[in-house]
Length: 137
Image 1 (cartoon, helix red, strand yellow):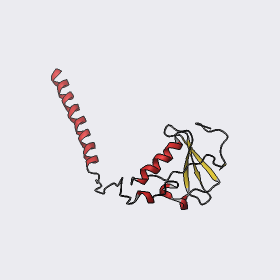
Image 2 (cartoon, one colour):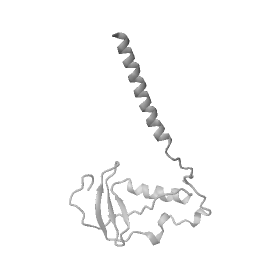
Image 3 (cartoon, rainbow, N blue to C red):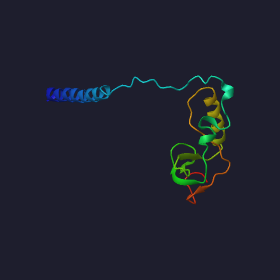
Image 4 (cartoon, rainbow, N blue to C red):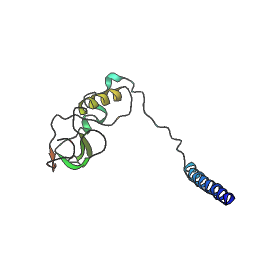
């Protein structure tokens, strides 16, 4: 009886171990990208960068009114998705952290880091906005 139990235990360990190896083999056979990810590029003359409008420039500055699309409940800060009259989608963030985030993004962009387009609005008109959001007001 003891020999039968030991054999069953060895079989179970080997079977479970081989399942794990099979799972690892599937992951290992996935193609690996050899492309380089670029986080920074030389900007040349930093003084020529427009820190007021940032990477999107004045040409891409969002023009309102915005239309509410959906609330985003991910992350720590209240935010929601909107679209401008041209159909471009934007994310509106609420709260005190939205102000320094815009400044930090512009400074990092000025020295060559790849950043998102961020624009600060002290007031923003949003059509079809729900009366209450789950987070923030």
